[in-house]
Image (cartoon, rainbow, N blue to C red; front, side, top):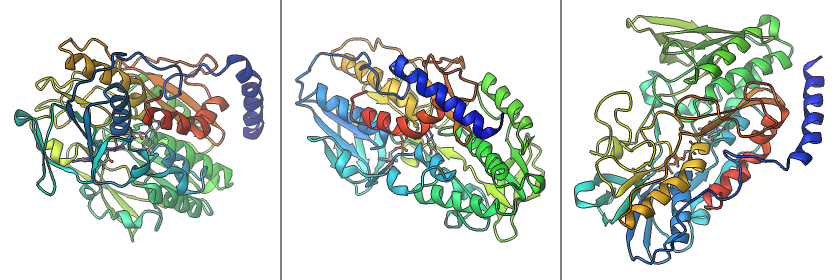
Length: 445
Ligand SMILES: Cc1cc2nc3c(=O)[nH]c(=O)nc-3n(C[C@H](O)[C@H](O)[C@H](O)COP(=O)(O)OP(=O)(O)OC[C@H]3O[C@@H](n4cnc5c(N)ncnc54)[C@H](O)[C@@H]3O)c2cc1C
């Protein structure tokens, strides 16, 4: 069966079954309200939320409803809100306009929540205080840290984010424009084909599946453009795997070998430099030896860290693999040393799950535990580490991979086998995730 026939037969199967199933979707999808504390507390408490990404806004929306008299303040200098899962669709040419991922914080911050348009410069948990970049002191009774992470392109020598989209440079992570420009670079590259060099960061990553999705879709684009005979895809990974969940790792590696434009994998290679005008990438191996690789298209995945204000505070894990990330109990999401502080989203130093799906499942649990703590009760709901990753494998087809902290697959949709090509999984990523995301942001899912 040809690719297109497969697409249409998958689509028909899906359309036939979807009516019957009533879309019993979980994970990122707006299903019944998750359990959360139903008590309406009338305390006049002061709550500061650092960060107005999905995690900060989902927290603010839920707390605003539960605590009508609380003084809730969001701290963030960023004025635009971006639907980041859409970046992959922009970078692969599926979505055409960056407008579909842009919104204004002004519109999204819940009524009655004060927005201080500055970043936190320092956290002083002993004093229950956050200092803003202008030196303002914000006292709190409770703090939620939701600052996300920062992309450190500057750690790759020679990398210039302004060049994304030109000279064969792509990067799905940076911004809506960079994602759209990444597609321009892929589209130009596939006119003739050549060597695509795909990379992975040596740190924890948000949506760790995104570099894999880009690899699948670059290979698919070369095949679609009819240039497979003079094309090659090479993937460079810092360690000895490409994804932390073994079943997904093994399935993706096996699939890459079978693609019309197969992907060759090179382990123990970290992208440490690039000469953009010469189209040469530099990879360092564990012995420190630098290897030079020429490319026609390079996908850059930058190292990712906690923002400085958090990393330099004493809120973070001091040693081990989670060093530098927010020190929370991975079940309750309460800080392990400062019980009036909770964490949500990408900043958390938890085993897995820097995704919007993680925020969807964990926001109600974190808010419930915070409300319990306010009432002098133990944090008694436990997050299992749920995350999900619709892995685009080719145009019109994806795997809907869902898993927990233990790395076990936790499929929630009866119609979808996590590691099988599915039009429904593609449909979820393309059309259903954004409404689900907005429902999470508004505290409705
Ligand atoms: C390319 C890509 C594809 C993705 N695909 C998927 C997907 O398919 N499915 C999925 O579930 N997830 C996906 N994600 C991941 C998902 O988008 C993120 O996990 C989620 O948006 C993180 O939200 P957050 O609020 O934790 O962090 P962010 O969105 O990063 O928000 C953090 C906010 O905190 C602010 N901030 C930073 N420092 C400070 C400070 N010092 N003081 C105050 N504020 C501060 C920032 O300005 C920012 O507004 C993808 C992400 C990317 C980039």
